[in-house]
Image (cartoon, rainbow, N blue to C red):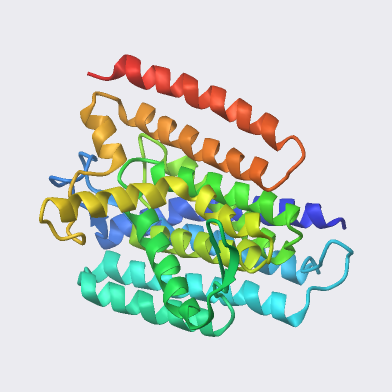
Length: 351
């Protein structure tokens, strides 16, 4: 079977597993009383099950297992992936499992911020040891630079930071799932463009799981993914960026993960700086995020989410054009038109 059909297979299997298991998870969550209560910082008005991350993780894992069993771990020439590449796939998947379990434990038992952070640093350090590591950085006017022992702290900051960035934008129905799904789909295309089939398989599975979850998570949501889902999505996106793009020695490819994930990165950075500027702890939640500001400006939940989707798609198509993908500029111009339209709608509805 051609390589691209395996990516389609893993996407479809992941989405179908999520579509099939999410209602079961919802029922179990209701029966066990594991629900997210309304509060000052929360938009929802009724208790919601927040265990949807279980379905997303299961979908991603089952999709990868099906492709593995069917012999789909192959390169562009139809040859089996090397041991190192297979190791990377399962290393990212197991690391994602660890981040999912950290988030799930927080959903169930409300871990302290320090405990969560220490566990995340530990898992990210182990991921670095098994090969999920950033070895190069692009420095303006210098080019590609090998960072040596700085690889460990920079990789840990990247993995932990992205897990929390996706967690922080998970404040509206469908927002984190949609942003993650779009980013994963763009990473799939770029990874194939860069001849990184291992990373592309994970990205395809993640995109199928995240976008399938939108069936139940888009406004009005029936279930939330919880910290387990957002931590898993954030870590896996960051790890796919590392093994699929940052590990290559092409200057432009090193920048691509940061472009693709620019929306959650910039949102998190702006919130942290704003909290510090006002003498607040960067770890205590508030309503300074982009989606909170858009809601306060008078936009509806759906329009806010669609605007951020279009912004994520736009930076994704910029990354496609930057990667040298044929017709990448056409996609970027099309996404620019979509972003312009949603921006006009947002301004029209703003107070």
